[in-house]
Length: 338
Image 1 (cartoon, rainbow, N blue to C red):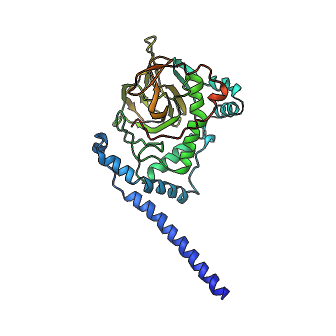
Image 2 (tube, rainbow, N blue to C red):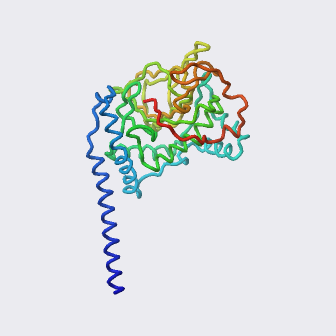
């Protein structure tokens, strides 16, 4: 009798395993078989586009999780070791002792008021991250391209609040570490964004001479924007310079992205991207803003929210290093710029 029960148990377990594998394979197959909304429908913000992404959200999240499992033996697990060693050490020290935060600030060069540049990715590890993103593209799982100011054909939404985002669990852990452990305290330290940085947003973009060549002058719907170049050292491009305009002095500073370097700036700083004339430029762009999309407005001490009247608050007054090096307790909301 015991032998019969054991055999029955083995058969049931094997059946459960096979059923689970069939279910998981079915998830990937179903996700890959979806027909994406057209570019025209996306640009027109047709209701059917949001319906497509929202109705398939669970399926796509399950597919990304299964994609990671299916490729676990040859797929990078992104983590902060991909980032510049000096930045990582300075950030680590500041989290352990916020009084050491000046070592973080020292790594950032100020271009104009409210705009700073520093090395962000480790050049020796950047190729590994690019290979990971290439695997994401080749996954054949539907991904939503950014369509804010324009639709960037080769970009991907990164934040979980976004429709069609890159929901691979290991990537999401990496993305949240960048936002919580790096970007937020850096923005608070350099630009005094404390209180207007509880919410996150992110996407990737790629500029090409034949498509998505440039971006006209604009400001961002963010308290702070971190724009990280992920070109490899041998991936050269011409054009695609970025102009930043200082409204106080009237000065315009032009800069060119270098491999692995990041520019962090106040969202209110006007900037424009010149046409790219050869090669490709690939970047990750991440934003911070407050609950219900509240953002700093006007000068360094003027704050308000989108669509509301402006109030004046000194964002840096009485904010201690310990408060800067903290993670907000408020949950993520559902507001997204686009």
